[in-house]
Image (cartoon, rainbow, N blue to C red; front, side, top):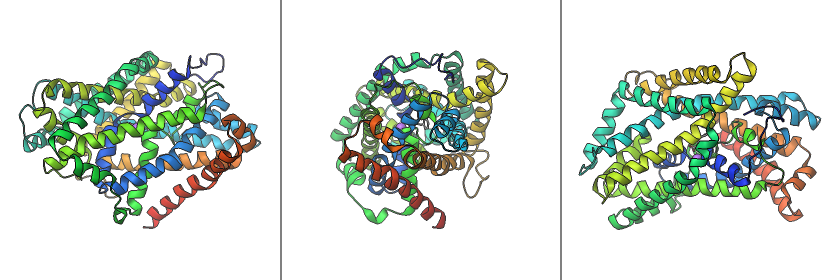
Length: 450
Ligand code: PHE
Ligand code: NA
């Protein structure tokens, strides 16, 4: 994205903007990460904490990032600098924009590995590998993939090349247009699987598992995981949405637009839960089996449902697509940064950023096999990258952003810009000044101490 106002095209419609924002938000976070985090945290406690975090932290942070981006009209670093200076505050707020570039860089390295799994599964399901298979053989197929550094490397590489090509050639807008068809289709397929589950059992148990409040499981760790995931899933706390905000026209209603994005993202995540957990329960699988959860559960259903090969192939194709619309938003900031700050052109910047991210991804995928014994503070490289970003970088960047927004910016003009009546504005102030920042700080400190 360009930094000058002149070549700064605005979205032709708020619909185009929503597409791009939904494209970035809806991805592997919803379909791959959300279900396995729910499973690792014991179900509904995570879901409930997550919903609270989305509503009370994620939503306001999303609005704040867009508003700041729209005011600054530049890349996140310069936007934070300029907006701070225009409010009479220190230009060192630019740092808040910088941590985001690092975040995107680190996230993409392991995101691409999982994008590679999805790509590999298009071919596996497509060639009928799972037809008539039971849960044991499906799990064996997944373990076989994980054990092969070569296979993982090939597909991670393919995913990274796809991402780099789109960003390098600059056709992200075209991809976002394709999202108009692909995203709704993904929703449809998810609901087909949910429908299959209603007929084939385990559905009631899954609903219970996901939604029946069990606060005994609500530990500090679960809360931090839920908080981090709220940031991850909405693509906030790393400047991406700040950059997107700079493309927003004045007439776009930020609150309504944020509501649309948040609802879509949440619905897709919950639908993924309802697609996966019934299969887990009706096949006696372990919900806490980690990042492989969707890859050991869904193929069982595809292997036995009518038209399963087609539906399954389409499903993995669509989540790969959803992953790509997110990965391009993860790569863009690094590329843009190199393009502006070094003598490299866009092509070279893309190659440079992607290569380093690709190498880091190789390190991440080796932690599933050859380097499985190597740990950083008890975590393999893959987990370390995931935790460092979700539980640390994103929440802290988001916290700084919301503090800047609620405590350092002129509030009267924000009220006008958001077009809030006095009553609603009071609630908004309580949430942005107190509830959201205090929630992040409390969860954070508790997790550090605990
Ligand atoms: N929000 C994306 C998802 O849920 C992942 C992502 C995180 C994309 C951060 C951009 C920035 O899959
Ligand atoms: Na998401």
